[in-house]
Amino acid sequence: MKKILAFILTMGLGALVIISLSNNEFFPEFGMADLTERVSIEYITKGSALDVIFNQTNNPESGPANIVTSIVIDYRSFDTLGEVTVLFISSLGIALLLGGAAIPKRLDLNFKPNFMLRVGSRALFSIIIMTGVYVISHGHLTPGGGFPGGTMIASAFLLLYLADDQFRAKIKGFKIMESIAGSLYVIIGLIGLILADQFLENFLPNGTVGVLISSGILPVVYILIGLKVGSEISGIIDHFLTEEEVL
Amino acid sequence: MIQYAAILLIFIGLYGLLTNRNIIKIIISLNIIEIGLNIFIISIGFVFDGIAPIMTSVNNSSALIYVDPVPQALVLTAIVIGVGTTALGLALAKNIHSKYKTLEIDEVEES
Image (tube, rainbow over all chains, first blue to last red; front, side, top):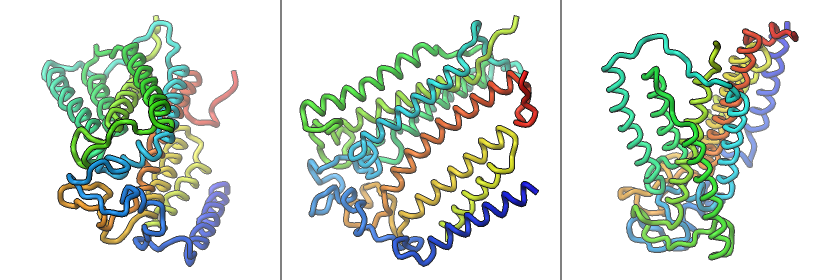
């Protein structure tokens, strides 16, 4: 009975949403969006009347060749600071809920890892870390950036946890790295407030679009975000795989 | 039409949220709602024949037709927050399981 009631309720709500969206002049059909009517065109042309050309345009309003990065880290950087704070608070909550063990002990594996698995996981670990660092440091040129790259670094630590029954990461180092990266992000914002006019304003020259050392503070900020996200998610993984020692 | 498929996904998740009494299934339903919302937001910015909003040496001018980058940036934010809420929910579920030895809400009794 309850299931039928829930089914009718969701069907009614869904029909309401679909009817209000179809034949609505403010809601474009799929694939028919007109970017010149939206604010997006300002982000794509970087606010200039001339075309931005890859590898030629010097010192545009915002440096990155990846336009999503230029929105996330440059135009809406304050938003991203809040987002990083949300992730920090969630990892803090997990540390409060799961980290209260008096004698911490990691979860046992169901099997005994042999020599090949241990060595192979170490080799894969370095490759995954390298890919993560590449994705983080090229966040303003290619797809990716601090958030996916940080998650890749955390997944490398997850691999070590799953393949080695003795491994336990140094959780204190993660906490220190996370705090330093978060504080440096705010300090860079405050330097922007002093040297330029606004909080998190880009105070370094932007350089040529598409070059690795370009777009001012944005690669630095993305590397800090990558370190912060990587250490936070590694800490979350560590808390989930640790339990209290039962004597 | 993909937009209506995403709305369908959102309401499948809502139905699961209303009918399930298992904590893990509730968290999975929340994730289905989140994925549906993300697909819906991305589909708003799609343009036919548009390319991904990244300038490369091939697509080297800002005068080309790009898909809308703003929904993609917003979904990047939403994904990260979704990871945070899911991890926090799973931590609560782990605590409940270690205290009551069950994940069904109906079987959790005050002791």
